[in-house]
Length: 172
Image (cartoon, rainbow, N blue to C red; front, side, top):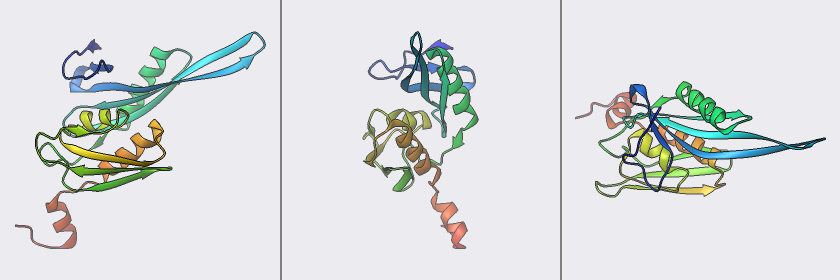
C-alpha cells in the first residue's frame, strides 16, 4: 500500500491500492481485559473501502495489534463491497437508511455543494464516488451503526429507468 496525499482532508488516513481501491480507517476501538498481571489490550478497526466510482464496502477487524486489525478490516470491507447507483456526481433521489437506533437521511444536492456530512459518514460517501449530497443523522451516532445505516441508504437507490420498468411504465 502506498500513502496517498491527494484529495484527503484534514490528515485523514487514506491509502491507494492496486485495482483503484482506496481505504479509510474511520475509527479504532480499544478493549481491555483484566488479567492477573494487569490489563491486556486488544483493538478493533472500522474501515471503509471504495473505488470512488460507485462501489463501496465497510469492514470491521479485531486483533491484538492495530495494524493487523486494520488489515483484517480492509479484507472484510473488500468482501462486502456493494455497487451504488449514482446520478452524475450526486444521488438520484432522497433516501432514508436505518440500522439499529441510527437513521441517516441522504438528500441529492446541486453541483458545487460538496459532501455535507459528519466525519464518520463522510468517508463512506466520498469513497462511493458521491461529490454532492446533504446528510442528516438521527438517533444513535455510534460510528458502526451510522456507517451501516448509510450503506443501507445507498443500497436503496434506484434510477428513474429502473423504477419505471418495475412499474411497467414506458420511460421517455
